Image (cartoon, rainbow, N blue to C red; front, side, top):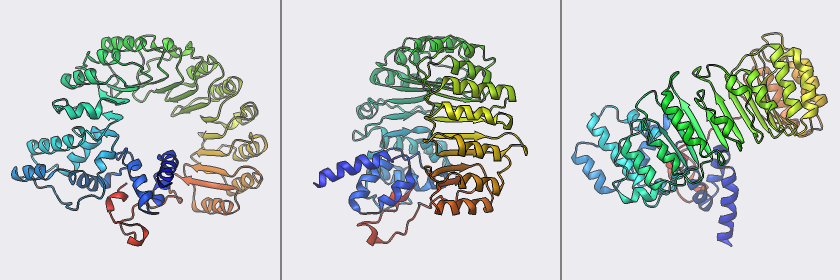
Length: 487
């Protein structure tokens, strides 16, 4: 029965693994629950880490070093062992996501006063701890740009990373690392490539060709220019996986017609953070009949309207932000959405006062909507009364999540009208970009009445819980180990 209970609890807790707020209170129930939660939290210790906790994490990591390794470091004049207590758990064994970018940042932050040679020695010891650990099977591997560790010299490293599903690296990756990856990693599902300006490694093509079923690809870049000949060869190699690719993220305009070849694409993300989309003609005739999710930042809505029109009504999520557009294009894209997206569940978009009534058609035609995110760009002129009246009158029954991003907050009277006329519906989940104390107090009152279930305020989240607590009484659980409350 105990085994059954553990299995059931593991399934439940694993479902909420993305929300540390829910996991931390569970952690302190008893020893059994703690033993279940700790491996879940430590799958990805870098995910929840705040910068001010870098030193704590560093001390926990090096506390796992063997006595021989500690003595060797001390002999070389490196004494970094400020944390002497042996951890209750072997946290390293729980780690499934190896993020070398995070590790390098932490090391460089904590021991910056050491010589370069000593820092390199410390890095190698920590790399050994993670990579040459046959008890750890990584699923995600983030390789830092200047990483030059002899990763494949130890057979144990092949065991720890041979089954990775996600791989992220810079395209100027060291050749001996890339060749090792080509030889042992055949099951990569998701590939994230940070396109470098020069010195790109063409052996990446071999890595792509060797994958059995590549599903997701991210093309990222930190530059406004790129090596066009390399990108063309890279894109052509990915076209060979066009039947399996379902997710594609672009931060630069492609050099080929790769997007047109991705006939089974379900998720498309476009982010023109560096102005790499010289024009959007390559998007305007794009047909992606199976597309379900479209996320775009800094992309003109005219091109996005054409993409939406050329889908087959399967879109369930549309997120468009960081792009300004006039009233005509705003009206056009709202029309295109409600005419072509009957299955839509989530929408983030700029809404202008002059097109509030076009929103009514969207609410009527998109009955599966459960979340709306409003970007209000009309400075001091937006008609909140009309918006709230429309939402209370025409919102589909499933719609109860709202996010409002604005310059000027709605008046107290307008928000009160919204809440009063929402009675009898599902309690709201609300998020605001900023609200004052008066509005916050009003929302609290309606939260007490059950009209608002939960809300957050980006400027001051009153609902945020302080989760880091090193002083819980021992009666709460059967042991004390401050490391379990790291994040």
